[in-house]
Image (cartoon, rainbow over all chains, first blue to last red; front, top):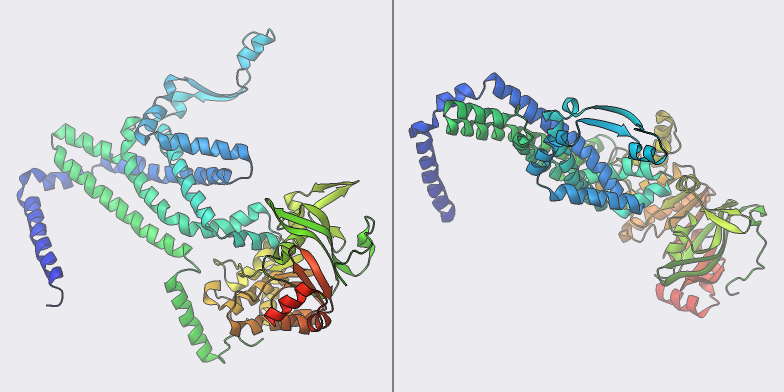
Length: 307
Length: 269
């Protein structure tokens, strides 16, 4: 035998796997048929689509966009923008998501209405002897706006933006200074350089951790119960379990659902990473070399040394 | 002749016709380190000016001042009669806004030691990027011109290759085509062959010679004495942040007047 260690490992793992399967099959408390029967019920699926999948997509879209803005502010030459960006990341990275969600879910206690306008308007009005001066441009009842979904979205997206800002900043800083120099020597403006030259290259560094963030976000939607927001996968499975006193099977169902969803994200991440590795990847290089070899075999071999 | 204290002319040097670059007492410091200590230079239209000197002499920094990649601390630089990076009102200089600086840079092509091609774009896209984005050319027009330029530098068969699939010499030739696509009136070369394997230097120098023959005004920071002698119209030797000696390349190389020039040439020849 060439690799005795491997065979020992295989034997040990085989025994462990057999033990695991044994438990799954023989322990009646798993209640497999009950689980399968209940994990596809309409409320569960609705929770999955709305509170888990849609929330993940919305929170990541908002979080990534805001994160890019905060990162650019952080790298700006304007010291005020830099400080604001730093404060933002400081606050939203310091507070746990569960706590943030609870806070955003209960903002209605502070304001029954959310209004935008001149701050301290009544107070300023009193200074000039005007009673009850109101300079509010528009407003709405917080009950309408801060629904469970919106409150949850705000909590998750704002916290995500703080993490994404750090990721984007690292990505932007990973791009060689020479790229910016070459682009500005061509007369491009700073915005053009960022959008066309720096960010596309930073993406290569930004995408893998963003994939991880998306997966983490998918899992963190289970924290929405702190808002509280109930149209969400784990809340629904948990509710079924508690109602029917079959708690454990529904937890297994949750495990399987999250495994399934995460696996889909992993596949997406693979293709995204491959797209942004354009011009870097070894496979891509090999493929193109193959193409140029076949092309050169057809026409005279112009290797390019001839000017 | 030594450092050339020409009669300091009044504030209208753009009057001289045929002068592409004019630098007057350019000073530049990085922190407490003074890199340029008053550089004067004149380059006429169509001239190839080679900047020579030991590393740390400030020649690359000076080159980067010409397109305002480095802000100068004192002195003035004009390109084609236009003051670079600043606007003069009365006696005072005001720094230009970013947009105005960008506009000035369009007319000045630059080629870097480390190529600095955009790695996420093909050779063709590297060349068309700035014409499309900055000059707002039509896509077909920009593409046709880019193809012609890449053919001119001998890379007509590499249009769709990414920089990572090209050799150093090929990358540098794409970089030259990229700069030419902006139709510059002046080309700056910052040690264009220093990062290349020796056998790839020739192909890049050939492209540059071709450009020079076409009448392009070029300022070339280089260690290639042969190139300076063969193609250069003027040679400027810098050391320690000042111009030590300048003149006809063949004369300066054959018969340097300054000790520092002599000892430098003795080492590199």
